[in-house]
Image (cartoon, rainbow over all chains, first blue to last red; front, top):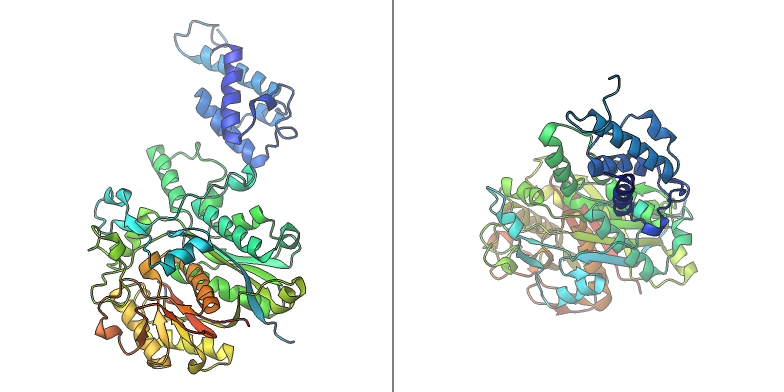
Length: 98
Length: 409
């Protein structure tokens, strides 16, 4: 999955769940200030993204620091890379510590 | 402290006869039944009642997402009914948010559809990691009341008197008392429920659901009829906007009816088997609060769910209070039993009957059960001036309610 595909997957999940217009999903958009999500939405955002990407995002310190979509994309890209790297037999970078 | 007079200035309905009070009234006057075969019920093992009354789909996309996300279908019905009542009364967001307007609205249980969705997922692996934040707001006991208040910006008192089939009766009564005492100027009062196989099963399991008319759905339920075999569940929402006479006059509002009295009592003889004495007490207490005698009532709108014992007990009680002097009918034959909504939908029809001078007949009452005799059953619609009428609702759990309505000249 390329970075663009990760961003597109995240945007699709967010647009569907929170009924957002695609043109509002700009990297600089504030998740709370600009897109209008609140604390309940933040819970559900994690669930829909976990469902879209197939890996766990909960209890992440990093999640609490996310303010913009760009922050979110960066976080998802790093998580996706970790997830890919941790998959046995994955033909990508070596596992941490190796 | 002088008690306020309480009037009805708005009404809203979603029922198996359609969306809106006009659709409800037109269906009732035409003698239509809203009961149909429901294929989904036939998929439930052991369920014998396969019919019910479904409300039309209510499109609530105009409710902002963050207000709508915590709503199940029953809240959509409630909000649609509230909006219709407010529109009719000419009450806008300024009054809703003034604190002068409150709300008494409930369902018989938290959203069964939501419970089913949750447990279908949860029982796979006993995980809550896929459970969304909005779940609890759809199943909490005051879900309908809280969601309607949030959607409409109601800042006055919000009450959720869940009492199964007496829910709306109690809601109207609580709203009436809140205005009577001067605590609120207006109250949106009623109930809502969504039909689910569990709802039907609840009655079927205790042998209180109709099971012999699956091929002829419109012929059931059959209140007071010899061939009645139980109730038929339906769904929807009904709301009446109650207002102090003072407030209504000051606004120049059109007054639809007046509430003259209310009583609620509890039958503790049995949690499911109604007792005529308790029903009699309830009606008599309502008349006392209205400071009126039985002879002042021109009509009684019965609860009459078409169960074996319920109809007999109610007919006996009505006979003891009113004898054969007062016409009696009920609307379950048209509407089925919409549980928490039923008292409100039937009260809306009662208010219309008072206004029009028309008593609607009991649908499907073809051959009177002699055990339900001794009272004046209305078997064909009657046009006559009506000044006052009494409305009954009774619930599993022994909660009885009676309300006295009056035509407002």
